[in-house]
Image 1 (cartoon, rainbow over the protein chains, first blue to last red):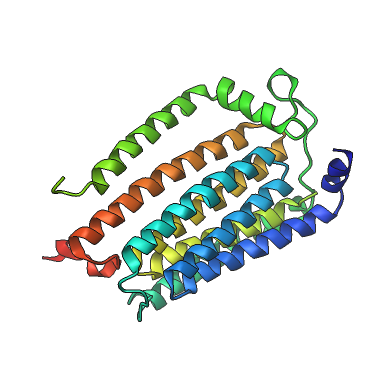
Image 2 (image 1 turned 135 degrees about the vertical axis):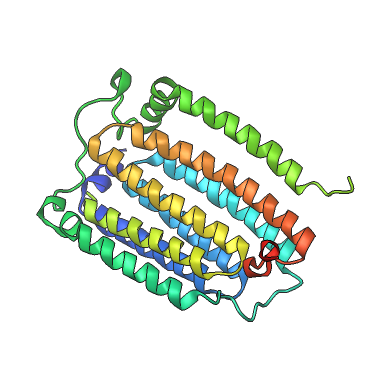
Amino acid sequence: MEQLEYLFSTLLTKHVFMLFGTLAVLGAGAMIFSKNAVHSVIGFLLAMLSIAGAYLCLRAEFLAMAQILVYAGGIVVLFLFVVMLVEMTKYKERKIFQTQTPLALVVVLISAVTFLGVFLKTIFGKSAEAALTLKPELTADGFNAATHNVQAVSRGLFAEYLLPFEILSVILLVALVGAVVLAKSERG
Amino acid sequence: MVPMNQVLLISFLLFSIGVAGVLIRRNALIILMCVELMLNAANLNLIAFARHSGTVAGQAFALMIMGLAAAEVAIGLALVVALYRKKDTVQVDGINLLKG
């Protein structure tokens, strides 16, 4: 634990975060530009695992584990199943991009440049130079959000934000029933 | 210590790639994956600002977004499978029934 604390407090974290971020961006790029849908899913998996590593650098251990469980364990496998189910017959696509691709890329580039222009001072200016310092104040029942991550998150989830959590469970139930109804074959 | 500008930059890049993917790809499955990527970029921001403020609200909401994303994927994939049964394709520009 002592070594872990030391690792998180050193400058090394910055570079590890940048490494994970670059990997995530590379995975996302591979996801959109690969011809084979299975390769796209693998790029997506790389991006999700890298984002979990980035969460770890930001001291959100519980969320990093949840990210790996939900995305790498659940969603990616689901995507792979559907790719195998749907894509195998027409395995190679000759034309992977829409007809509107040049226009869409121009629009995305223009909005990206606009965003960067607006937020350039905020992201790269003096005000952003201060590191992400953890404030010393404690969350509910005295649990610090960084040193007792799971306890603090559970206090937030089950005490302060109980109503959104319950609404989320209803949404999940509705989604479950909806998925079953949609995927059911019509004859059955 | 991770500076805020790095987190914002990475999350901005991921979100842009997600938007571009939704706009340019024809495969409905990959469009769904790009939507997931955009949700993850938002999650990264939420966690960074939770870290910045020293409270836990951002992390709790990021967890809820994760659950919502799982529900969305379940519905989206069911729609794709149903579409494949009906139209025998998952390319979104092959689905133009409303054009008449």
